[in-house]
Image (cartoon, rainbow, N blue to C red):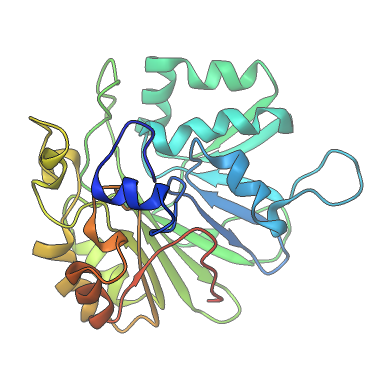
Length: 286
């Protein structure tokens, strides 16, 4: 935000310095040994890496990166296009469901493009906690995938069988503390509800405040649920307010969402419920 072709209230305010601009949704987390992982790879990834010193290359060797892998929640373009920016690494570890992998390969030749520059190593994430890095011999950071209701993206030429939407839960093997990252939630399934209750920090789908919000700037736009998102107003605000997690943050926020505007009634409602509206550069320790 601002979106290049949008003159909604939020985008205009961002252009005039009244609202913090935001890049597209991407989460970075580090394991105890300093390896970094991304949850989704946004089209703004190069800018995001440049703006976060811990993700910058070390002085030597001349070509290096602390990034150890990318975990995809779905095949949406705003979650996968940043992988093209990582082609210069030579090889890349990608964690994704089989359906997501098949969708982006069959529709846009994603894997074929990446493999023209190096090796893309794909991993299907586990349903139960396993080490995220199995090569070090130390448990470090554990992770598991939560299958969520979801559809393939509009560009999909065919619907591959399997999970098209995932949330990820991470656990520090030393402390037992857990982080849940769920940027695309169409429905609160039983497994997601359990993960929400057991997490010390939650990064949750804050795409839309209300169901018909996008239609106010784009005639005939689909409703929030049709796009695979719960709304804050009608669902997630009450759900998250009752959680014991120490950190509860809305991410993946659409430029039309009024919670982006400081002082708005919607922003005040979110903050009164003990939740944070995410911003670029927000950091915390689990």
